[in-house]
Amino acid sequence: MNQGIDILPLTLDRVGLAIAGHAILDDVSATIPRGTRTLILGPNGAGKSTLLRICHGLLAPTAGQVRWAAGNGRPRAQAMVFQRPVMLRRSAIANVAYALDLAGVRGDARTTRARAALRRVGLDGIAGRSARVLSGGEQQRLALARAWALEPSILFLDEPTASLDPTAARNVEATVQAIHDAGTKIVMTTHNLAMARRFADDILLIHEGRLVEHGSAAAFFARPATPIGRAFIEGELS
Image (cartoon, rainbow, N blue to C red; front, top):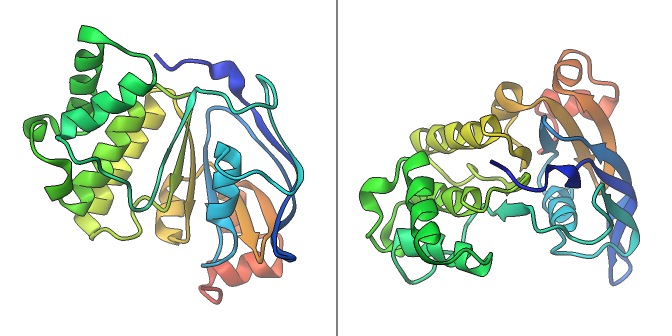
């Protein structure tokens, strides 16, 4: 059962990030609700990953504010998986157990939860194998298992299938869907329109650091509200 569901919704209030006078994000305001699968879309360099890191608390905005229902601080009931996850120099199960140890889970409960997480992502058969020799798809599923074991209320995913072959990408997408089905809110960046059409419930479209559109995925793909949205769907922005 996921913990701390009352941390949502997440509100972005005129969030901006500037580095050396250069605006990476500018005046982004949105409310990200519980329950739905939210995808942040945009061309390369639009600011998607930066926005995700601000939401997770890895970056502090230089303007505006990030607010959670549980308060303005960074709540513990969240996790993040990156496009190229960091694997520790230990076994697959030890990678998951380490994350649980950091979260304060001890003894038999830690081992039980680590094994259950590997089983849910289909990696229980290679629990003892070194994480660093796994394939890219297996490493991504291990990173998802490591996050899922923490029972987060919200999981941030940064282009989780971008560097994978089609079979591995489908396996990762199925795992993300299973995490969503178990009750975890998904917020994911991608520039893959096919995945977004299959997976998204609501869309945030970022272009040149600004939020261009925010609404239901069905409405966005049927009738984008802006010329930039139409250009993105038609493949004219990359």
